[in-house]
Amino acid sequence: MMQAMGSRRWAIADGYIPSSSASDDPALVSHESACILNAGDIPANIEVTVFFSDREPAGPYRLAIAPRRTVHLRFNDLDDPEPVPRDTPYACVIESDAPIIVQQTRLDSRRPDHALLSTIAYCQE
Amino acid sequence: MMQAMGSRRWAIADGYIPSSSASDDPALVSHESACILNAGDIPANIEVTVFFSDREPAGPYRLAIAPRRTVHLRFNDLDDPEPVPRDTPYACVIESDAPIIVQQTRLDSRRPDHALLSTIAYCQE
Amino acid sequence: MMQAMGSRRWAIADGYIPSSSASDDPALVSHESACILNAGDIPANIEVTVFFSDREPAGPYRLAIAPRRTVHLRFNDLDDPEPVPRDTPYACVIESDAPIIVQQTRLDSRRPDHALLSTIAYCQE
Amino acid sequence: MMQAMGSRRWAIADGYIPSSSASDDPALVSHESACILNAGDIPANIEVTVFFSDREPAGPYRLAIAPRRTVHLRFNDLDDPEPVPRDTPYACVIESDAPIIVQQTRLDSRRPDHALLSTIAYCQE
Image (cartoon, rainbow over all chains, first blue to last red; front, top):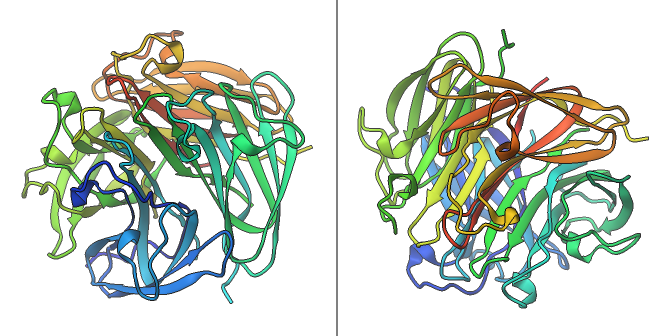
């Protein structure tokens, strides 16, 4: 049994999903992910709140991650309560009832040879 | 009401805006951003100081971010008190009177298929 | 003699090894690395546990790093107790009996002009 | 006068300078930098130690950064006490007598459309 690892509150400040993609291969469509690891032995119930520059936040988006599992959540796929708009700067806060680890990654395939960015997100108890 | 999240002092050590771009699409012009999230319930009044290798710092550049909003600030657009020079190594310190989260991102389109870099900035109370 | 530096527990949340590569040059094959520094004066005995979305974790994968040495470990090369699957989201926890520093890097050469991502991993004692 | 900001000990675990470059423009030659900010009011005297996989560390490499200045140090340019080898995994520890902030960036131009990676380094007092 692995000791609990991670934090219950995380933030990503640079969210952006390009609306265009040079490829229609699902793996290479422009997308942004919050990759979340629940390394512990209890489920993690998670709420994602999405912030914008000119309106009140959207969400919460809810998901659960089973013990000892990882979910690579694509912001492109969120639709409840509403989709995340493309070509629009956003940010997010991710809150969990159990410790998790969050890393953000973007694949930008507006051009044929795609670009990547990634960073461990900001955390704070 | 979301609990205050973030820090009041942040730094980015690798600032650099390439002067050239393979595209004139504003979204794909070479640029560098400080993406800032104010997840709290009070406005954040922010001062940015820009450091160079061979002269005294420039600034402060001032902006305010409303509660529950994000601003993806392009260093390219700063001009008061002075523009940020292109093709010139710089760094910056970002200070706020309310907790914020800062992430740096650069899009480098000197070549047709652009490159990206991003990192959560360094913070310290 | 350098003072011990680093942490004994690290995590990477976005693991992904593309199965294809535009080049067969070993340096440019799509790969993902955990770059580990043991800056101290005693050996570091390390265990890597790999997490998935839909099954129990794999591992531990074991390695040792001598004092004052770095190992840039390719997840592609792990095979004991089992290889890391390609085109499959994973995450990992890296535990050591001596302080180490961990940075993740991915080279994605699915397209001819490859993309890179890197971040210092998440650490917690 | 700005309050001291940063840490006195930093580490980068993934060092690697490709030996080839698709361009001979000095700005686009494959290179790796430690971008260092001294935001304080006293000089920072800095020592860099470079670690390898199969030999004792090289260094210290010494530099000083004046108050309120940034240096974007290219590992490519280090030559005293010895150059940093190309195509060779390395890591480094950066120690300073005054607080500094360190960010690592690599520009990899082995292919015509270069790739970038960057991360705030790991710090520990």
